[in-house]
View (cartoon, rainbow, N blue to C red):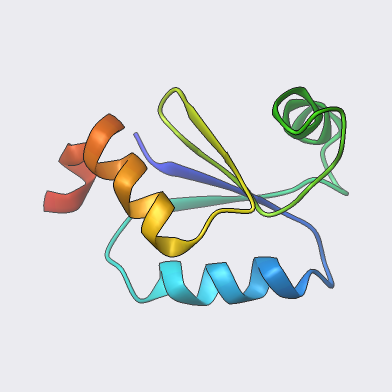
Amino acid sequence: MMIEFYWRPGCAFCMALRARLDRTSLPVRDVNIWEDADAAARVRSVADGNETVPTVFVGPAALVNPTIDEVMAAVRTHAPELLAS
């Protein structure tokens, strides 16, 4: 399992959260919603029909524009094995 990080070019919020994720040892898969129509649809499905990014998936949890603390809490709850990697 890994964190799925949905983003788009030019998004300052995405860049800020991604920089914080880079300071962790967590495995992250980046998904550009402008290059992947299915990814954009997945984001819309959890963001009230909007393409709000960053959107982060941790196991079953979908986090729309989360803080790093919210991502880490979701990891502790839904994917604690990632903390050991």
